[in-house]
Image (cartoon, rainbow, N blue to C red; front, side, top):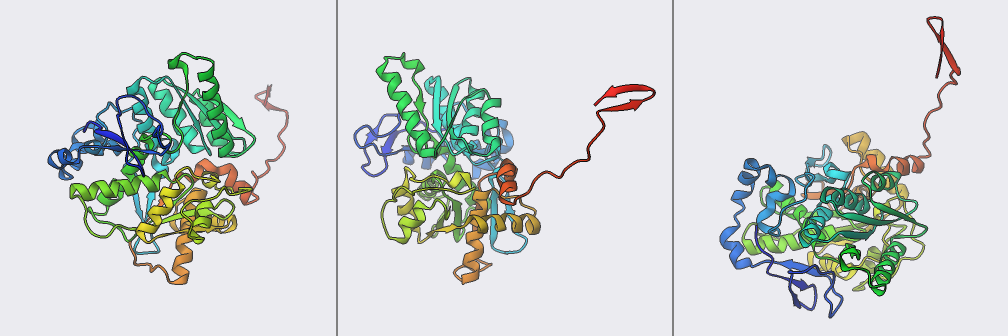
Length: 420
């Protein structure tokens, strides 16, 4: 496992020490990337060793099979990563990366697993996150595993499973009448108040928000390593990624850069597609208008809760990746997303999350227009298990639990009246 050489701001390329925990570049407020000594990695990190290492050691299972390109630290792990790549029955070139197989049922386990690992390494005791739901559940789980206190802020209408996760894992849960942007504001206000009150440093919350610390990207980048390894160390033609905050898309692009520097993969990088819901489509709106950044999406509303991010912090990075790769941003209506959930469940046996179905809906649309062919090799991410959204999907379907016949209040058993 390599030591971190330094942290680097995304655009200004300022170098900052990783010896102490960092959020953003203090000079520019840009997000930070983790950088390693690539010359050293070229000598020590070999892709041929990855599978052998994973087979030999339980500590190298899951995403930690890529320990040679992750920070030198003792993992806090629940078995995240190395999720299935399911070949579509209907489309010969399509593979679905099933991230619902992760702990807590979503891809968020990767980023929060590594972020909490580093928080424990640094000795942090309180972590705070604003979340559309799944990041909160993942933080709560990994914080519990690491004996760290989690403080999570979620919109009050998130899927019930997300609220339940926070409570079950023992997190400090605050439900907010608003969107993830309102949750982020409350996290910031709490941290500011703690500092102004001269709260002991070990009791001040550390903000682990999307792209406001460098290690969630490191965890998410393992999706890029995995999809390339699972395809025989080759690139697909395209990657379809449901995009709320967009850390997964950003992390995969970073993985592609690292693998190319290490000589692990060659050829043209895949076109990257960012998929959104029409009810909250800041990236699609900016992409269609050829703008370098997005604007706050007003009145955001969609049952794809993870896509309800009205202003992604990394919008400029996402849009730049789409432009570099020759991909695009596409949004689908909630009606199209629901139809895709039902179609893929019935015909492929996959209960997609609404976010994953935004990707399949877009894929089906591009097939119908001829922009894609069924033989084009595409990796499409289902970012979470559909079972985490049973209340949201049932409501969208206008489906209620079937009624049961009225039972007697007591039942005679062997001459004895027993209560029901």
